[in-house]
Length: 350
Image (cartoon, rainbow, N blue to C red):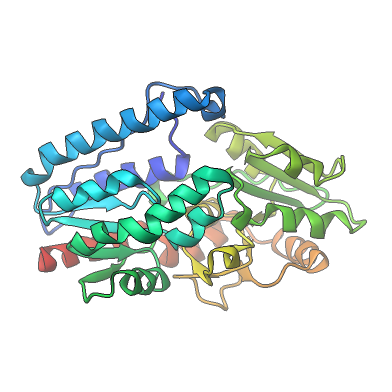
């Protein structure tokens, strides 16, 4: 099985499913390119530098060859923007039917990568990729903040659309409620980049004496594990499949979202993981505003992390049924609403 982060896989599958029921008769295809068959886990680190370089070029040659070949058969092609990718310059040669989709401030994000690769990607994104963005027919961002950022980069007037991340509610069962004992927190990511704020959360929680469990699922570095100083309240699971995640989530009182978006210069986000928590009936504590969830929503708390307040919040929401959290979240996270609006916009702007 290809290793695809669960949230991205869910997005692709739901868009394909939802397109079938659209009243506007849009034909919608989805393509995802990955490397050769790989197993779930930290596979990339098993390759040496030469192997990673071969993978990098092989994947992109296959993808862009395919895109050149099929793009003319579509009225619109939506491309999730690959930050710091030299091959995006080839998009200039394509038909003018490409709409780019953006999930972050790319220049800031790639600059957070350490070493020569980070510097190279940052240079490409800052000085070269803008030529391809100017060629795009339109710009789509998951938040208004990101759309404004991209328009500022290209210094052009272009068709734009805010397409927030959403969740196919029907694809997500409510997590079985197994809450009991000390408060339980959960943080999930494929890779815990600095902007996720895992270090900050650990530092804040480890100084208090209260009992709690903080589960971390995803690839973490040795330095991040050592941050917990061997405190048994912190449990690092590594990469796990959806069955394991659901089992852990059943015990969770509060899901923790990113706490260092400021490292990317961002103030708001539209995280799929937040939507997964809420669809499962798990309230969220976060360090940033959400693009579609109002500030006064009781099950998404956006504030500076205070460990005592986090513990109090966990105790407060434990009595709230999972079903209630999900039902009250649905109007803010349901992907069907945003997907229909996107296809209507594309029909007008093609």
